[in-house]
Length: 189
Image (tube, rainbow, N blue to C red; front, top):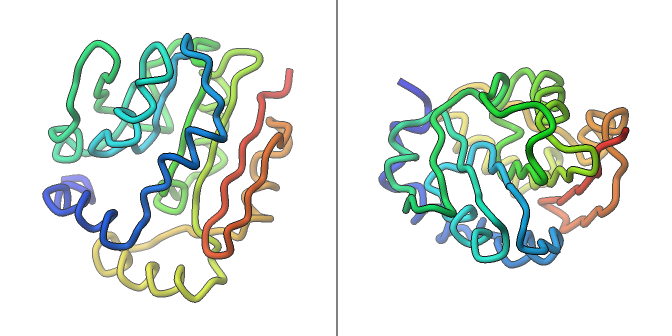
């Protein structure tokens, strides 16, 4: 059983209670044109995917949890995909945008994740990462709570995340909101 299969029934309420949904901010940063293919890695219950689907061609909500994906409101523009983010089934150079929102700290092999994202993104593809600054007090509280639920976590500082992606992506936007940050990069040729 995957980690999030234990919490999928309460996940959306938890996100709302702690104001972790940053969908407006993410959508504004992405500046979608309407024709993009988006993959939301660790997209869970599909809330972000559904929200972004209004502004793009299709959003694939990729998650390893059957429970989380069972809550996705699937249609022609929001497609749930059960799978491993480190080894996706997407063709090389087939995706315009990849989002990783509140997910990076759950993945142990983060370099492999970035390698896979680089593989599936088109030449001018965008990567958006939203995660939590590991040194902030709010993150330390979140970390303790999530550790109880999920076990080991892999939080990084904003600088460490930039260093993780800088060889494959040119940073085009960086937003520092103290306890969380958003980094957007464009795939290097």
